[in-house]
Image 1 (cartoon, rainbow, N blue to C red):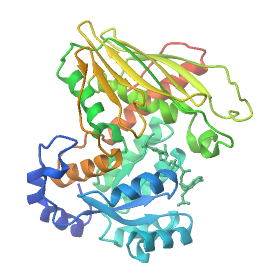
Image 2: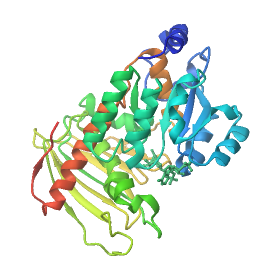
Image 3: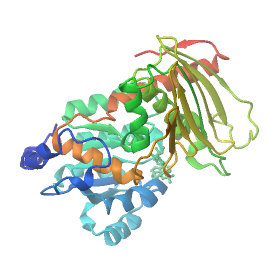
Length: 371
Ligand code: NDP
């Protein structure tokens, strides 16, 4: 899964560690594993809020990867990051100089954390530089852009994963296990809501070109993820959707303020979801004929959710979501194991998003989800 011979040699040199990591569960076992010969180097692209407050601090705690460089539009900020985080000033790049990453053997993975509408451009540049790519959610503005990213990563022979941190979080992983092992049988009825009250000005998140849409692209993607987890990673066959009335038209002139949709499955299962920038809410519940599972507030935020099932509260460890995700992805890469959050999953979710917007724009018409 590498392009350059140098990177390939380094990758092969880590196979012993990789073998030890193979078949480890996706979360919670990092402390049990041996330290790798060399931590994988990660370059963050876009030094905004998520990079600054969550990913960079996490990269100081990870066992299998470390912060090794940045890509930024602000050279002074990049220099300060190099100083503060202890990597060379030569590992600071601009968006227009990403091709030079190819010559930097200290960087194995490029993690794209820019606004959604720029993900495709930056992921493709990273792939062409021969680096593995982690792309923040949503993977892009549309499924068509996801196709372009996947094609670039395939052509370069690099791995593409999506920053779906909750796949590496124990409570969500347990929901996935309950579904996969059919502990309560197939989930048939699901409901979820996720949102926060967007302040003004909304920045790029209310800019259609940069965000791709409103809360569906942001909070809604977590709901799509939860539903697909509860349905063992199967996509729905169709959706119906409606935008809520806009209460703050000046702020939401380009994107929706809130949207509700129903995902419909081939086995008759249905999921009712609500993504909003009008109120703080974060919950998900899945029911079958034999039981239920509920991720209570805050189901999707950075704090640990509470998972309760019809058998009672599930006792699981609390982890730092970003540390778990970064170490989980690095461990998968070192082990040569397929990722549990691959680019194809990000693409699936954008196909669902495309269908939801098509339905909402058509006033709630049923729209089939195209593969
Ligand atoms: P911010 O606005 O805080 O940061 C985005 C950064 O991207 C900017 O600081 C800037 O960095 C860079 N950038 C490049 N071009 C532009 C542009 N035209 N307009 C604005 N910024 C630009 O956003 P977030 O960090 O909150 O979000 C970034 C991505 O991370 C999004 O895709 C979002 O969905 C995702 N995210 C994921 C989370 C999760 O839990 N998985 C949580 C939060 C966000 P610089 O100055 O260095 O060039």
